[in-house]
Image (cartoon, rainbow, N blue to C red; front, top):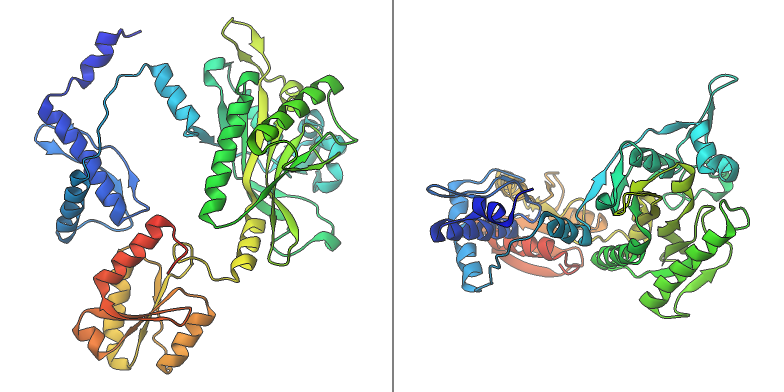
Length: 454
């Protein structure tokens, strides 16, 4: 293992190299302000300067450089501190674990052999809600209604150490459940769906911290969509697997976590509504009609890891069985979108709207300018269309408002001469004429902040 001196040696920057390294971070922040969806590669200091690799919605051009430099100057003027420290590999790993940065995305088969479902307990407790595929008299398959057994199999692919935990496996594969015809309800209850599923393998002393991290993600996620939710505890059902002592421990643990998070009595309890392998906390929302729907869920499972013989090597060199936290934040994507559509009546915030702006030429002579405005906005990452139909302007505006498009950008003679657009909102508010560049800055700011204002 490298000693401390050897660890420090590769990053023994000169003052100039350190400044260039910091400047690369400033440039990255400036570019992300301009392109909120920017993805980063690497950005080191080099012999004659610095650079950063970006994945952007369009290529940068020399015309972008002045704006990048202006933004960098403003960021530098803020005199934000640059902190420098040396961490051991274990401290660095723990830092990113604590911030939930190490979910590993997996994709698992859509069908499993009956024997896998028998091990997991789904064959006994969930078979009526599964689509089954008979192959021959000896082999039968079940279409996957959930990802749990597959996560256990992936965990067992190799020997695990306590240093690997928490191990967070994310699987957003397609799922199918045999919902009866009378229970189907559009997007809100479908037979085929996808969910933001994850199975987190932890030691027993990591359970509470992991739940705290999931609560934090849920709060952040639902605030972005301006949605409120409640938490509901589900306890041991009548048909359960495992021993009563372990169930009592799991329920006491999850109730203690909820008491700490919300306070005793500040959450609903549904007796007997836990999963057959463990107690759970459901994330419950109301739709526009006041009906309650479960979206996400957080479940504590001591049983499936045992049934699949999952194990890790502890600090003392002994094999131990991990505990699994099953978690979905928004749950079924289809159901979440259905609730979101109902609660917003389709008027999504600008950053979420499928079409963010509609360019509307007043007359045929403005079509060419309208096309140029549309292409320029596309280059800035705006989801934009142009209504080139031979209809009256007011009819085009009305149609765009019916589609709940946030911005209508009307262009005529004055706008064409002034390199501008006249901005109308779907709420019928008229913001008047403004330079195209000003509109771009406005929508960028809204997208960056994920604001619900227009």
